[in-house]
Length: 386
Image 1 (cartoon, rainbow, N blue to C red):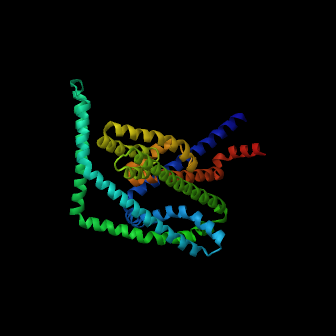
Image 2 (spheres, helix red, strand yellow):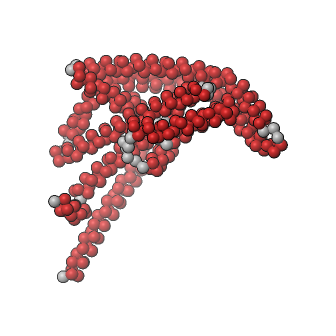
Image 3 (tube, rainbow, N blue to C red):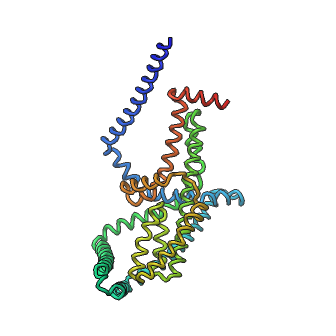
């Protein structure tokens, strides 16, 4: 009898292994077939490219404004569509005023930087020659002067290239401008309908599903929505805080184009971990060219004050552990998504991974509950619970 039981268990193990292997082969086969017929997805890609931007922007604003609309609806007792209309109009007015204010500041600071750039360059070269005038510093002086010249040539080449592209590519510029116009016009309408009927979308989806999966699907959609909402509100809050801290710090030390660099730092902060590092490259370049080592040291002091405040006070307070993703995983996901999808991949990598993680966890839980492969383990856990 023991031998028969042993043979039976080996047979069951072989069957389970064969089923798992078959499932893996089928998944790989589906992926291979999808790659072979990838030309079919061309129209879908074009459609997503056309409507993706306004839907994405409207979705971000939906998660920002939906709590306010819900709260006003509860307190005022108005119809939701009227509250949504008022909120969107006020929000657009605030956005237009903020963009106009920032555009004026950015224009002034960029103009001043371009006008004074030759002076900054000469002062930087003179400082290098005066500070390292001894023969023992010949090699270091040459490296610093060459680096200073390289920064200047790179900046001039970048400006010339973009000026040439703007002049010669009038048609391309007009096409891009029309795309921006379509986004600006369509986004408020999409946002309006999302705020009015977005809360009923999960119910609409759930009602079309079989009764057995409605409860799990409802939980899944709720968790996905919560993850996305936490990330969007948290990241935008942290980015705004970083922008304000750097703007105050750079203004106090007198860094030229400090407001512009602070805005850039806030935008790049939307990229976790890597964004803070990338934002400091133009800061120290401008600081060194415009004020030498002294200004670079002052910029470093501002960074040394900002980083602990951001890392230990602002980020935990606003964002917390909303996504519960390991830092190494975040960096790997960022690098992979950035390589594949570019700048948009950097921005959407972490929330996209969070959504995928929730889907995979729910799918695995469903498979584990319904598969016979885990029946003995589940029975054991159920017995321990009782």
